[in-house]
Length: 126
Image 1: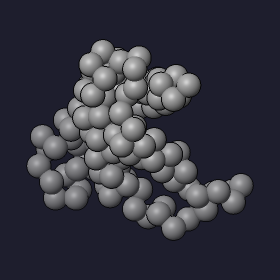
Image 2: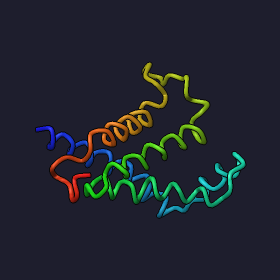
Image 3: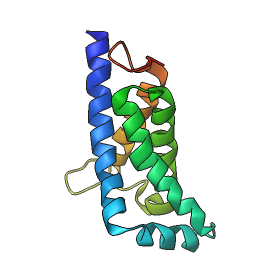
Image 4: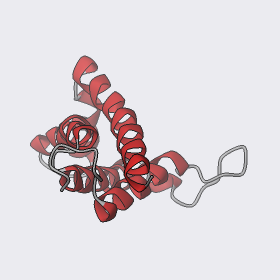
């Protein structure tokens, strides 16, 4: 059952993060480029979001170097916290939950997957 749980974690995290990446592929990186520039970083850094939200989920879902994919998602989420959500770090939402609970869950799932590995139902099980 451990391997089935890892597969469920991989598919859930991969699909949910990939949806963010597909949106950026369809609508462009303009808002990300503006945010990166506003923080004094070079514009090419914005392409890292495609690595973290398109390539990494593909690695995770297939189980091909899924640990590396999970680490890429974790780094992507840390950048998201630093560049887009820092003002919300200590805030609660209307229901009393953490304002960044979704982003926090993505980060936690990515770290867990990086530590656990992809399990038996993966291309290379690394």
